[in-house]
Image (cartoon, rainbow, N blue to C red; front, side, top):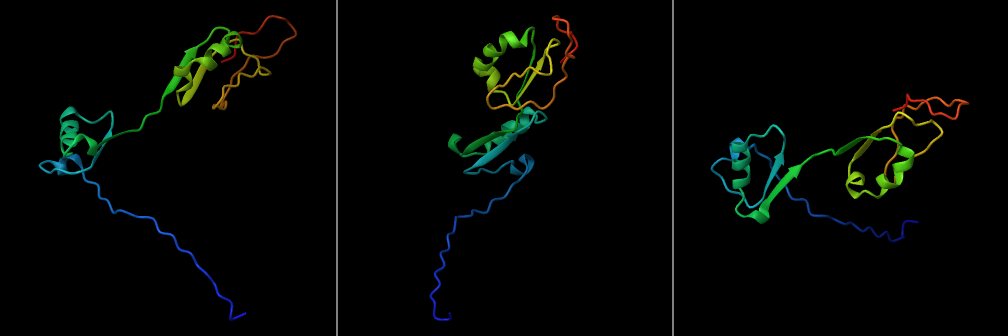
Length: 135
C-alpha cells in the first residue's frame, strides 16, 4: 500500500541547558537563579556566599535532601494504634519505627501510606499472657 498517507505528530518540550559551579567558583559573581544544596557539612561562610549570589530572593532555591524518621518506644501498640494513625506529625515522617515488646506475629497494625519492612514479634503461646520479646 504505497499510496497510503502517513501522518506523524511530533511534540517537543523545551530543554534549557544549565551548568553547575561550586560555591567557591561563584564568589564575586551574581546570577538570576541560584540553587544551594543544603548539607550538614556546609559551613556558614559558604552558605552565605551561595545565598548572596542570587540577584533577588525569588531566584534563590534552597535544596534539602532529608529523610524524616519517627521512632517511638510504645507500650501497648495495639491499644494506641488509633492515636498514632490520627497524629499528623507522626504520619508526615518518611519512616516509622515502633519498639513494642508485646507484639505477636498474627497482629497487624496497618497505617495508611506505610508498609511494614521488618518485624520481630514474640512467639504465640497457649498461655493468655503475652510474651515480652518482640520488637
